[in-house]
Amino acid sequence: MKVKVNGEELELEKPVSIQELLVIAKAEQPEYVTVQRNDAFVERDKFGDTFVAEGDTIEFLYFMGGGAR
Image (cartoon, rainbow, N blue to C red):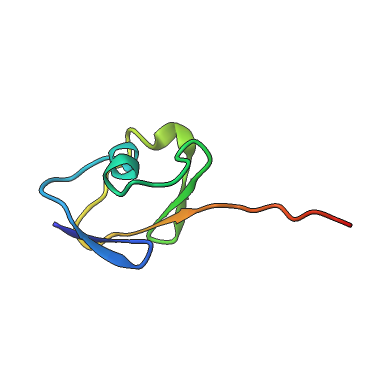
């Protein structure tokens, strides 16, 4: 099964949850990542219950704060 993660194609042997995908794709700081699946945000408490499917586009988003002078 092929999915796209952060713009790169990834081949998976079986459907996996978002939680598992974070490990497989070696997401940086998974405790702080926000996930979009096909342009819809996935709630953090649903990471274990939301499975990716063939052709899905997944984005790991990291929000960065800026400082003031």
